[in-house]
Image (tube, rainbow, N blue to C red; front, side, top):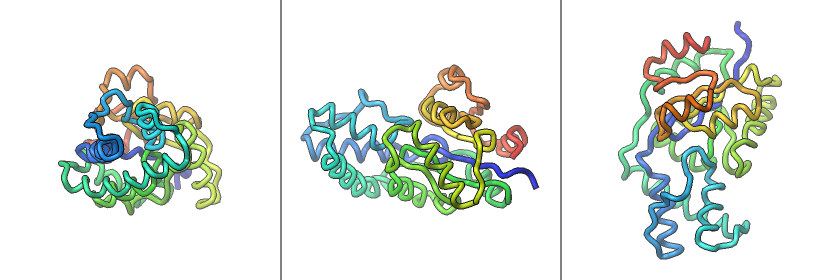
Amino acid sequence: MPNKRLLLFDIDGTLISTGGAGIVALQRHVRDRFGRDDDLSDIEIAGKTDMSIMRDILTKYGEPVTPENIRAFVDSYLVLLPEELPRTPGRVLPGIKELLDYLRKQPHIVLALLTGNLERAAQMKLAHFGLWDYFEFGAYADDHHDRNELGAFARERARARHDHDFDGAQIDVIGDTRHDIACGRAIGARTIAVATGNSSRALLQSCRPDFFFPDLANFADVIRRLEW
């Protein structure tokens, strides 16, 4: 059997597109809390953690970034998100279902998440598209607001579950933004960028990931190139 390998997948723009459900939920919170119609175009969202995004929005509106204000924002968002998911034209991205079906049958592969989503938001999104049960565990915005800190949580959870200390050479981080590439590098992992989100191919390639794919539609080629 090949050596164990830990695959850490991003969610939005990598596994699925929600059609903007998360952003709409954030916009609704801003309207409800601050009475403003705001498209949040001045807030960086792609690849950032939910906690970091919420901190930025609170700061924009002059609200102190306190645990109480963050908790109120989280509670509101987790009510609004499931209302928006059925209203937006989301989808599973090309090749993802076939790739996950293959990978979960491989005894040496550990499938997990490394995402900027809150854990409950991740579950809501992936369950909505029938993908939640593919993943054993994850590292989430609940763990830390800094995306680059999340890899350590994922590695520790993998070690606890599999009694195996995954080093960087045994880990792949798969995502669609420069933040995914950066957080993979933070733990010495192999980085795999896919241009299925909002980041351009040029931007992703300029970050020099170990592998780049326009998408994962040709999942057989992805498996061959990555030796999964």
